[in-house]
Every structure is written in structure tokens, then in C-alpha cells.
Image (tube, rainbow, N blue to C red):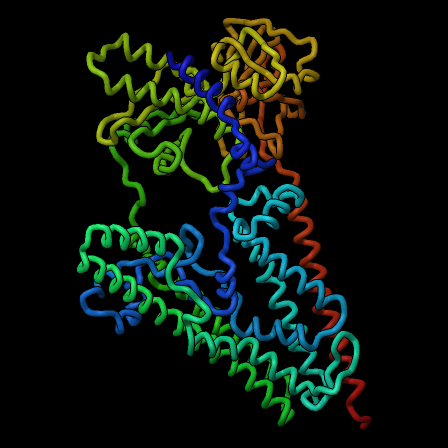
Length: 612
């Protein structure tokens, strides 16, 4: 019955491939999944004003108690518990803040730096910002997903703002260098698009200040002109509640809704204005410092140091909102995040390597508490293996449902439980030895788990991955391995010669190094209860590199020749090694460049010294 249900699930999913669903698919993650964390267009202003959209997802009363001072007393408690964040994303741990002075210097660079470097930084910044908008600009988003390599692999397109956080300070530093090295800067005529104009740099400097500091001041003075203080979801919710109140004729309820909405906006406006004037003050401090330097021409090193202190002060103050003393716990106060329970204790008495646990006491795909103590077939990770998720959808979910129904039914006996374990071949091939149903009781022990590795009698080649996963509905994976014809070359001419006396065991287990020992009188086909991942996992037999293939849609398999052998799987990603090399080379070049710049500066100063 379980297999029939899984087969029905596969067929239903295939038949339900509507045009909308097809449009949602990409070569990577589904479009709607990628766009969940799309930065709102106006939310981009968090680069300049950190709490433009309220900051992080938390209760207003947690770190913004002062925002409640103008809220009506009757609503203070409710507003204190309301969400401070009201942007387009489902939730956020904090804004992407570049720094008010950094943005000021970036605009300064746009105004006064010449050459292709400036335009490259501007284009990179614009692309970073617009790509982070994701679903808020569908045309650009769909183009990027379909044609830009790697973009459809982003779980959160808001990560694209990382590029802006690099280009903004980089051009800003060039802008600062430009104005500090231009003699009589304020009185020098401006150069726009390579041509000198009748305007002086003073006018351009004023424009830069107005675009950044002036904008922050205007936002402080007229916040509702530049921002809305309810999320789209909240607007829809309040509208629906208002309609219901109006339909019922309950004027008192209508007034309460309006008062609560007004109080929520009042608190959020207070939070917004505090950061708007804060950014204005940092910008005016940096601009005033530069203006003083232009007028009085003191040592530029003092200016650079002072601007650096202001930037660090600005960034550190915002950083401490999210990483501060409350974020740390004294070692003596540290508690185990997942206290042991009876189920975990029963599992830990078994020291067999490679065993896995299925936790049915929590969310199978969200709860990672079991993994704190032992290997699990579920849990949570932001980066999901698509193939394993497909196995969950098409096989594992159905087997779990069958387990739940069996255990919740009446008249349980050894025969029914035995049949239940036999009816979960996918969980068995994943070596699911323990099942937690209730954490207060010992975990169920599955006697039919296949173990870390086993030899099979038959090899079945199929046309493609779809046929591979469908074949799991029909075969006994303990006896047969299903292999995609994409690996036919590795399996050419090979037919397992099953030896019932043959053995293979997991001798040593580390997350990045698995050691097996085999002993067989004939050539065998071994299946390993480990996820196939070609980008980094290499296999060695008696120290010699060899090949392995994907079997049963997600696992590893390989030919094992007669005799005693040591089989090692090692995780050796080439990309990581290349990255280490590039990082080392980059560090060396950076230090050489700094040393060269220091040498040239010292030589210049020596040449400028008057002769004795």
C-alpha cells in the first residue's frame, strides 16, 4: 500500500505540472523560493538609515522602549509586543547597513572621481541593488534567473547587497583621496564628464551633502513623505478587520482598529526618525570636518584618522544593536541547548558507527535537535540538496506517514511492527536504525536497517533519474541497486557475483573521511548508505584512487574486487583548495602593494627634504 501511495504521488505530481508550475521552475531553486527574501525597493534606504524599515524582526519593546512614549497608554502593551520590522521580507535578523558616512563618501566619489573606475563601481552598485529586489522587479529578476549563471542558486537574493557593501566604501575611499589631494579644492572648477564647467567644487560639495545629509534631514522632518510604516501584509490585515467591523456595525471595534494602527505607526515613526537624524549628524560631522580642512588646510592625516574614527563609531554603534553583551553567555551559565531525554539516552548506548535516527517527535525537516547527539536523516539546513529533497517528497514522506498511521492504530503486535519496518525500504537503505516517537521513552530500534554498506545481488540500469526514483517503488534495495545509464561506462561488462559470506563494514567514521573494510571471495557491487556528491568526495581502494557511481537515486555504489580491501571516501573539494590558493595569493599581493606604497611614500618624503 505504501508503494502504491508513493507511485500515486509521483504520478499526481507529474500530471499536475501546470504552466504556472513550469514557470516557477528554474535550473536551480524555484522562483517563488528565491524571491521570499526580496528586498523592498524603498528598503534599499537601509544602506543609509539602518532602521528605515524598523530594524530586525523583534518586538518593539525589546530594544526600542523609547518609541512607546508617544503611544496612547491603552495600547502601549500591545505595541510593545508588535513587530518592529515592516519591510517586504518575511523576517530579518537586521538591515543591510553600509554606513551614513560611507554613502556620503560614495556620492562624493561619484561627483569628483573621473575615469572608468567610477562608472564600474556605479554599475556594480546599481546591479547589486536591483538584483537584490528580486520579485519586486519581475522583469529583471526573471532575466537574471534564466540567463545569469549562479543567480538561480541564491536562497536569498538579498545577499546581492553584499556587492554594494564592497563598492560603496571602495569608491568612497577614492572620493576622499580625490578631495584631499586636490589643491584649493573648494575654489577649483568642477570637471563633469571630462569637461571643466563654470561651477566650483564648492557647489558640487554642497550638492553631495544635500543628496545625503539633506535627504536624511528631510526624512526626519517629514517621515511619511518618504516612508510607509505598515507592511503590505499588515495593510491587508487591517483592511480586512475594518471591513468586518463595518459589516457588523460595531463602531467601537472600528475605532479600536484605527487607534491601534495609528499607535503602531507612531511607534515606528519614532524609531525611523531617531535613525534618520542619527545618519544626518554623522554626515554633517564628516562634511564639516572636510570643510574645515579645505578652509584651514591642516595635516590630511588628521582628517583621514578622524573620518575613520567616525565611520567606525557609526558602524560599531549599529553592529552592537545585533551583537552585544546580551549575545554572549558566561561559560558557567551555558546550558546544553538540547537536553538529553530518554530517547537520546537509549540511542547513545549504541556505539555502532553510521547509524541514523528519524525523529518523529518534532518536525522531520525543521528540527535539528537530534543531530546535536547523533546522525539524523532529517533536520534543517539553509542549503538543501535538491535530490535529497526529492527523495523526501517522493519516498520518505510516504513511509513516515505509514509509520505514524501504524503506531497510532490499535491492536499493535510484533507482527504488525515487523511489517512496518519491512515496509520502509527507503528509510532502511538510509540506515535508519532508530525512530524517536516520544522523547520520554526509549527510541524504537529498527532491525531491518541495512547498515552503513552492503553487497547486492543485482544491478539494474535505467534511462534517467526519473526512472531511477520510480524504480525504488518496485525493487528491494537490499538485493538490487538501481543505477542511471549515465554511469553505464563505469559498470560496463560488470555483473555482481554475489557471495553470501562476503563482508563489508564501516571501520572508522569522520564527517570528511569514511573508512570501510571488505572481505569477499568474488567481485561484488557494494552500496554505501551515504549521499552521492561528486563535487569533492573521492574514493580510494588500498590507497589507489578509483571510481564510484550513484545508486538508488541518492546513494553511492562501486565495484569491489575479490580479496580484503580498505575502502576510503575522502572529502577533498578542489574548489576549496583553489580558493585557499587564490586567497593566499591575494594576501601576498595586498601586503606587497602596501609595502610598495609605503616605500614610495618614504622615498618621496626623503626627496622633498631640503638638502643639508
